[in-house]
Image (cartoon, rainbow, N blue to C red):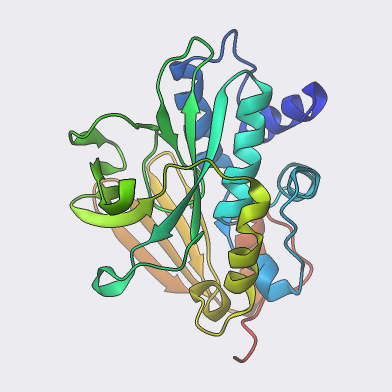
Length: 260
């Protein structure tokens, strides 16, 4: 990612170029990213391809004002951080589902980040929907309290790490660095398999200053950090304005889940 692209990306998330690639800048970037760029799987239901290259992701997220899911958001966020002087490793993870069953290999992509002075590492993640607001201390095994909940990173079998939120397992993280292309096969599975949750449903979700806004199919859900929740079913004329007004996504037709 060159300097003009990095500047355009920073404008997209409403952040300034930092004087140094330090921990405070990383905290700012993660929070601003979560507030500006939605977690969404609309491309799957709009018949659009998902290409895991830096240029394609830049054109979608920055040029097109879109969001994406983990491979896209963390893949591009990692490129931004690297261009600004951070050290970045792409890490593969498997997401815990119902009954604490693990998803397939390369189910999720997260980032291990070090600062320009060698500080850290930090676990940064802008592609997991509801998760930590700020990077987590990768080396700590204590509880980490922050606005998104109480997080903990613990040792798991085979040298992996488990990331939990409020006592519930979120994902199991491998520690070996990966390349973005390593995630292509599972990205394709997420897009096409009838058993993939992304293939089965529509989601578009973004952090707000006081909570979260989510459009799940036609259900608009507003939550706040105090535990409040409002939801309502949107009518035909309300779907596209909701994508535009709540998520900054301009669409010319409503995405619909195709029959499996």
